[in-house]
Image (cartoon, rainbow, N blue to C red):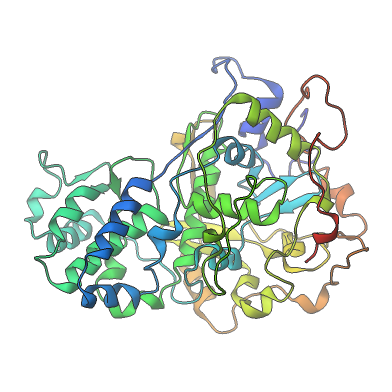
Length: 453
């Protein structure tokens, strides 16, 4: 397949990928207009409301929220996204491997990235409880002081399309309620507007209510792994040719791009932050024009990017020692969502030479058609994910078998690139813009001395 893999065994669904449509053109019956910038779902207004609400809360409520470890979320989350930049990286995402496929190999968002950028725990119990509609209605009725029969009645339409109206939660969990109810309402909105953003504009998911039932246990959940699993699934859906928008924690995605690719951050946006604070606060996210020229420029930059233009270890070489959970190999869980997590495919992000990786496994049922509305992945062994994650001897990447990256040495093992180029698509653009050739894009800053530090 032109532009696609010579060997289709690793990413067998490439024919239905947006990258295939951009290279080959639309199939018969498809829209002839190529997809431009994807719409990024934002809850910036709600996050600003939560910040204001927090300032006027009683100290007892603030303490309850702070003890959960989730209080910084509305301040970390941005409402401004670079749509062309995110769109260009979505086109590089392969849901079969859960990695971005770039000309020099694979990269992905890892568990330590979630902790460093967003500042939420990656250790703890998986967020794996799947609620039925009756349980959701009961929890909402308790939180909002309403009758169960009114939860899905229109009007008032508290629940619609699987989400609860955030203005209703804010109104009914105000200062006249108990400190616990105020804290639960605020945390529900924070999780829904920061970590688990769906594709609606005025609603948030009610599912976190089950973990918020006992505030003393909230910190004990691995919100970071759930956030990453949810974002992986959103990225997978967004790679379908007809997908027009993407949800999930896009602050994490955009800040991750800035951390690893020094050529992409907007000029003079890095801010000084104190040690231990989420690194998303380092970046002053600004509104960027979503025009086709910027998207084409980003596509070209990624098509011809070199390995020396990546800052492989932006947090230092000892990140796996500081956060050993990032070496976990298996599946990440967010309720009914299960996504493969394979650090063996991206060892350069841990400071080690990339060996030829082995495939961890495939889902029991995977259906990734061109239509994003019919995208479905199910794992037959979902019940075993919690066991693997929670046990002390969980499966992990063995770093002792790997070679440390050297500033002047190779970043991949012999034979890696030869095999990689057979199982991937190395470029998105079939015909580069006129005047540009197979070299580094004009004006691109090469950070030669900071590749590994």
